[in-house]
Length: 355
Image (cartoon, rainbow, N blue to C red; front, side):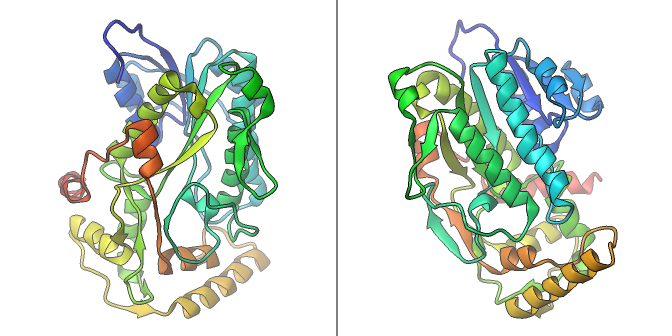
């Protein structure tokens, strides 16, 4: 990572109190950086680490600019996740919030922006097996989260000096080619299904719904996952890569464990780590999709609170294969998934025993 003799950098992490955000913060502190977290609330875990915490809303451009002032690099991790909810809420936080971060970085002279995206931004509903970063954005989305994250991701690519071509590809914009080394440098990471000790989203959802879970399809669909420590490390590697090779600016990288897993075996492994039994019952992908469509209609029509037990997006996500070629991350960032899935599951089981 940082070479001997380098002075400490001042780093802002948006969403520093979240699962991935805290993991990134811990690595940055271990690297010797001065770290600031910009989140909605105060987190005692960050306070114990000596992290400066600035409370604020990512959708407030003034608050964002005040947080960004005086930093060298921004890790933009904050987002509204989930598969259900009002589109405007997702757009305000994920898309407009990211645009506020970009604008603040430019006005405050920040050198680098590392943005946390998601492979769901290119998910159209079918199998994706071994695809790389050239896969285009889909024409339609079945959920607000991937759509608003895709808009944000494209804004970060453009801020990093890339422009979209007529065929949907991306190239370095002419003005950046003429002024090499100038302006904000960005890298976008697409981690898929982050999990591990401290997870407050994926693992708790699986454990909470254990008795109601149904396997969708034959259970053979393979997906990428990524252990939390590997995901956090990839973000630091991205920043270091931008310092060494500013021409990487605007690039997108899939990151994962490097070996796809059978989704339903992984879910059973997480259940086992939590001391629960594996899934016994199943439902066809077609039935799950129809069920999701009906539930979406009911929840929208009657303005029901909470999240439907199934949606069309979730039905497709849980019944298809989606794993990605990470050779670009290995080559450009030096990314290696140091913690194996097996080791991660052992750590998760030990963690859950303490809960």
